[in-house]
Length: 291
Length: 197
Image (tube, rainbow over all chains, first blue to last red; front, side, top):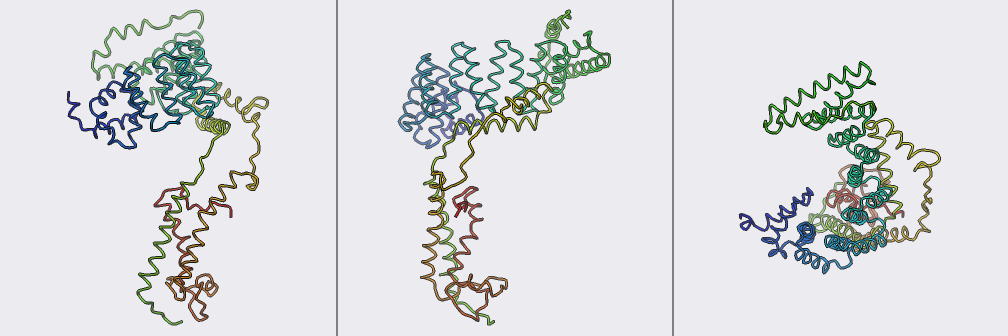
């Protein structure tokens, strides 16, 4: 238990790092708070309010309601009319599953300040945590009609659509993300996966090119390499494929296999056991008349 | 033109104090303008428009990374004649006349008060306190037309135009130190003379 010997200043700096990097180490935050910072709260000054908010959210994650209530009451004392504190209160109701109360508070905030983006996003999470995905999607699309440049919201919407298996709409959302960061190989790979799941020759073509781009940007992206291998093998064995593209596809699949075997040999061998490779082979969609 | 030798007391008790006074008053003005600055309220439509502009800019810059159909779909969303976002959204023309817009009026008033009033007060005090002698000499020769500007309060026909009196030195400082404020206080400080006088 070396945490007890940690100086409160180190803990404070650690919390600041986690705040800036958006890490969600809720249990660590709550433990460190209980052991170290709760006794030194007065010394934190203005940063203390940010720390309180961080600890509050972590406490909600771990369902430590006393700590959460303590933080909230302190914040309420200091900032009695603050929209931000009200939003935290709505989060507490959400954690206690009092969804109606939470929705009421959020509606109040939105009525007072229409441009408050964070409250609208909290409404979406309330619907999502109740499992009402359709309402969550509707709320999020209304939000995005106004705030169309919000990357986080597009990401969330694409996840919701994938869970509902609406591939076209999910692809639309990921396209928005790609507009924001076209060189992020993870977005490219996600887009290619959606296209590959949709199936059909044109989608396979698109999927292959995006997998190739993702693999080009990061040759260590194993999912992209596997995706490249599978799509090019599919395209090559498809009847619609012209012969020149067939040759291309075969070359690409060979390159992907080479990369994969290189990575396999350089990495820990248990990561790429032969069973996994066999399993991947079994996952290939059969060549039906649809293609 | 004779070479004038100035009392070295002028250096300590006039030249440097005027610089210090101008600088410190400038910093005070900056903080004062921060305190009385009104909170800018944003409208929902403004936010929506700015986000739409960001999205369309991204489409313009990074559109080539999307499949053709996706790009065309988005371009149609923004630009189509009958239902494009940029074609159908009407915005009221902003009132350019500051006289009728109350918010702009109060901002202009605050700007004037913060900037001009201290300048007048301190300029007058300096003129009263440090009158009747020259303070410094600019290191380059000037024509005679600069004499009334640089030698307020010292009317001597034979005096070289390079010699500067204390009131003029004060005004030179006010305008000259503004670039130093942007170093010290960062951009967008209270010294920005954006007021439409």
